[in-house]
Length: 169
Image (cartoon, rainbow, N blue to C red; front, side):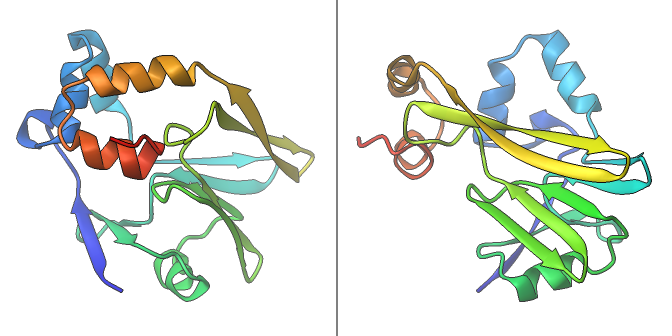
């Protein structure tokens, strides 16, 4: 397995491919807002320390870690220095829960990359230090999405359609 370090994009104009295409679909106000968002968010709620991130981040080298298959061994390597009770992350398009010596890791799937008429979202509730993580399904207009995707000019459309959305081209 290969490790990939994906760098932080300081300016979307300096990037290429899908990021540039996505940003061009937005108006200037939305682009400015997105560029203000952080890569990690941390909270302490009722004594429960939580972090939300796209993927483990190497602060020293200012890069995201990425590994194609998040095994427990790989997760221990990437998240060992994270001092949180719960870590919620994404990037991988499949859900996964790991408990690393009491540190709870939730890979929250990708609600945008689904191949049927349902997407999903998560509800995280903290009540007096007790945490509940629930996944909820939500029906969406799959037919309209497929039509729009096929008509789009997104880079790598064939790959995205087939790999991320189950659309045969």
